Length: 336
Ligand SMILES: Nc1ncnc2c1ncn2[C@@H]1O[C@H](COP(=O)(O)OP(=O)(O)OP(=O)(O)O)[C@@H](O)[C@H]1O
Image (tube, rainbow, N blue to C red):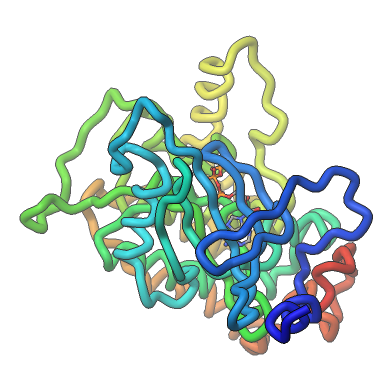
């Protein structure tokens, strides 16, 4: 075994799952060795991997390039890579280390992240404490503000696409998966024009009302979806959870009606008043309006002040947290 390889073997990798029954074959990619498959998406697979020289742990996203589409520009991963390039340098945005194509496969090597907020909510028995949600809200509004400042709207804001970093960045939440993102600015720097009659996009649970109505999405809509995510993380429920209807369009229609402006107080009934103020403000913005991010952060900071809580990054899942919820964190994330 070479020195490089022994270093790799000793690395802590939370995605190593011992006794895994089915373990697809590992492969070498441009100086990286894959280790464990950590995710499967609509485009392909995500693996944890190590850089063979430095021992750095990374994530690799693979997308089989379709033969009928020889132009890489029409595939999901080159598109997502282009968005990552526009977001380069942002706090809470995973860094891309390498992008390329090998054997008809598009490959993107990026920072590996820890558990998603949806997983953490689950590990903390279904809901997070108010202090944890407020600390996350502060970071998430800033990350979304940064993304908007680069001319991008995410259009798929959900806790499954938000994850804590690993090791030194384990106190920083990240937003990843920009497959649905797009620029809201034209080539001349103006805001794109309003359109309707579009297909709703995003996860129905967090989708904003504009998307249900088939409207083109803007900055306000990312923030509205974030509002639903925060209510979800704090209460572990939303009125449309488990809504039933005879068909998918009928279900979407039903959920859309449940998100009408006059229903917002009902959605926020178990949260401090600021959550309702936040959602009403987002709903009141016009399509091209620039949101007042400072004011929105200020709403949640006001609660922190009122409760005399500090931004100490002691989240519910941290070992030194006194959260009554306890944690069901699997061993592989204990040191993340
Ligand atoms: N950088 C990363 N670090 C750790 N895990 C990751 C990373 N990127 C993706 N994953 C895991 O892989 C899964 C799929 O990745 P991603 O969401 O980017 O793919 P997708 O095809 O766009 O997903 P979806 O079809 O759900 O929109 C994620 O849910 C997450 O669990």
